[in-house]
Length: 233
Figure (cartoon, rainbow, N blue to C red):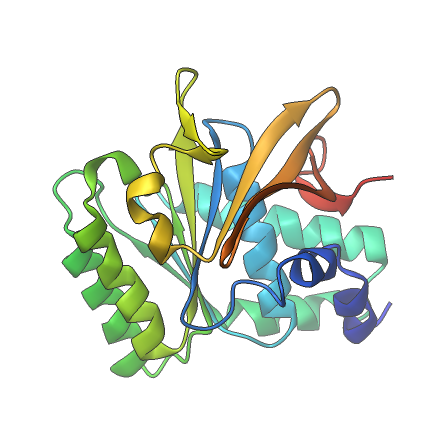
């Protein structure tokens, strides 16, 4: 299969159609779930889909070691390539690697200003024309609405879309279907997707779509065996 056909057949086109074209430049999306459910896999699949389209991606991680992040990208790429019998696999792989940057910060003590400064510097001074920024492992429990609004301003300033992951807990509460940990920053978020474990798979549920709050089954799932987003049968 040629890359163009692979892109058009991606299950993420369903996500875009269900969310008025996706997150969009200048906006922020969040994948929310309990630890270990599949947030990173979803973010990496979204990022890899953008890379296939010729776009540039910055992946921000707060993990001590980024080797596992690289492994995620390799695994997702290999699974997509294998399942769709991608032509010129190594050429495509080498091309997308050039358009991906992984940045690492320590979660403890790091300020949002420092993270944003690093992103801005990479784009402006490093001449890396990012289209998408993924922020994996962000601690929403320790940030104010005012501080988080600076990410929205950054997205608007640089014309990028930003995807965050948000970790929920067993006793997490909800307000009108929205995780309470996100309600202080709800006005800064365009899209919120919840990951809900089901028998044999993990369901993606849309709970905020730009100006609308809802509870909509996207008919997409995360396959826990191959860690790819797929269309539900």
